[in-house]
Length: 199
Image (tube, rainbow, N blue to C red; front, side, top):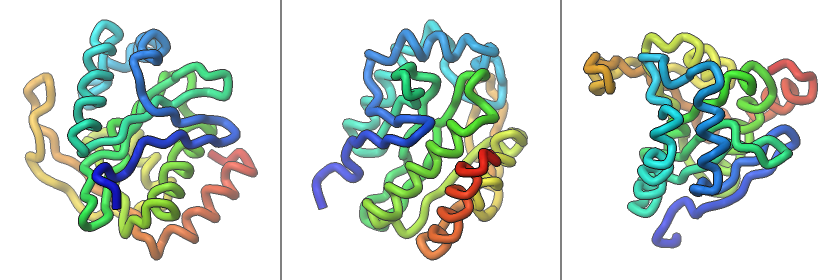
């Protein structure tokens, strides 16, 4: 195993490309954050447009430290419409979390998120040999929880009083996971949904 696990990689699908995050994506991501004023949602931690450069630098610093692998979520045109990561990386136990994910409002409720998750899960289980992949979200973020459940992830439980949000409120965190044994069935279902556009 290399000193960095996982290594930066580009994941390419039909509707989306997950590209290694860089400051080259900053202008697109500033525009994406402003679409629907996503940064105003109190129960999320989406960077505001004027904080995007710092957020990219923060994610890249965590990547350098080995605890995160950061992606820009891009349309086939190359336009970045959001961000996502592998995070809370546990190389010894081959576990990681897919998180710190957001998409501009106009890219939501379509194939982009479903295909991005399928690409990331396939890479995690088929290339990185993960034993499990986690998803975490604010217990009150019902849109995110429904999206995670639609993937086929199972609820592990609630981490109560888990973290302090930027506005000072205390977040209870809903934790979900997919195990390696579950991946073949979930992969078949996600592939079917994308083929039928039932995303």
